[in-house]
Amino acid sequence: MKQLNGAAIIMVLAALSCGPGGRAVAVAQEFATLQADFQRLWLAENRDNDGYQELVKRFLNTSTPCRAQARALQVGMTHRDPTSTLEKGASTVKEFAANNIHWLGHDSFKLVGQKTVYIDPYKVQTPDQADIICVTHGHYDHCAPEDIAKLQGEHTVVVAPADCAQEISGTVRVIQPGQKLNIEGVEIEAVPAYNINKDFHPKANGWVGYIITLDKTRIYHAGDTDRIPEMKDIRADVALLPVSGTYVMTAEEAAQAALDIQPQITIPMHYGSIVGEAKDAQRFQELLTGKLEVVIKQAPAQPDR
Ligand SMILES: [Zn+2]
Image (spheres, rainbow, N blue to C red):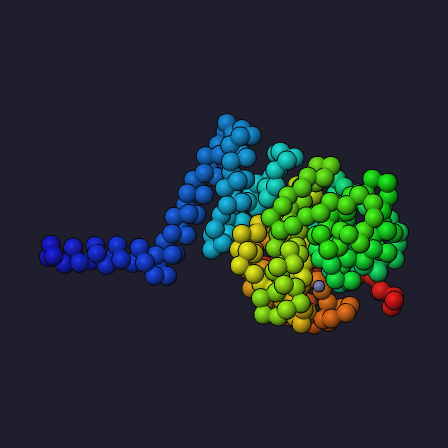
């Protein structure tokens, strides 16, 4: 009997330490620790800002398999510190995505928050004054000097990889993957964007996607990319992901990428102009039904040019 117990213990230990069972246990342990910290740092009566900051850091560092559970905890938090992110409840992020993120077609977005930020402006119809313009890469439908000029005022800062930067006049900051800039309080982090099963966007070009923190909301614009391993380390409240296939991820690949990232809201892009159709966005949404919230935006009609 004693020997049997010994064998049973060994079996349990084996289950804990290896194989998919071991991974599930590790995730359960990670979540239990996170939950305990959440209890200690957030729900406790005497919570302070340092504890709160530590907790936000914990959420940012959560491993991919644990993210969905972690997100459910985050939803219960309301924001306390204007410099912190990922602390907003799902409804607040949803509201921000609805009211402050404007899709202008293709990969082009206008983000309105404490500053006005444009990403990859292309076929701009309404002249405007941007505080910051972020460009992901040198292709003409992303790095469009005449469109950028329509949005540039005296104080506008353009952020772009080197090949695009040399085509732009005005204040331009060159960026490469892994770099962070803070422009007038807006944190801008460049992350890698490249193809892995086609050659349009080679990794060696140093082209980028962006994580932009605006109004305490982390917005990830993926740029022209495939589903790349680095996405597992990207944390964002809102993810803007290409879905057209051909030059970038297909709807299927993009759905997998969204599951890697686990944002509260995902918005498909890179369709309806040049390449890709509305059905790609719908397919993307269907694939994520019951898993992640996908918001399909309507872009203004674009003139041919
Ligand atoms: Zn491109």
